[in-house]
Amino acid sequence: MKPISSRAHGILDYMTVVLFALAPTLFDLTGTAATLAYALAAVHLVMTLITAFPMGVVRVVPFRVHGIVELLVAISLMGIGMFNYGLEQTAGLFYLLFGLVILVVWLLSSYREVPATPMS
Image (cartoon, rainbow, N blue to C red; front, side, top):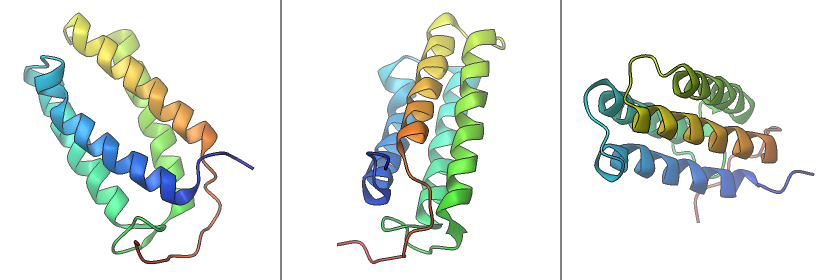
């Protein structure tokens, strides 16, 4: 059994949205790096809201699919960070570390199907 429940995962997802949204201010990201952070905040929020798990609202995307998307995002962010794709060093490091954090959450979360229960 993995230690991060679907409810805890949802809470971490909403925290991720906030961190992505605040990243340009907190880490002085500008230009493309800032735009990417805002886009990731928006996409992550929508994905969390439409996932069929306790913290979802519309619940149309299976939690398993949510997990696959998160794995792909983690790998992509680590790639952006490692190869830096024209970003400043701070931005590259931010995306590398954030990708690693998302990967760790992915490894510790159980993405098996969960009953869609209302938020309480």
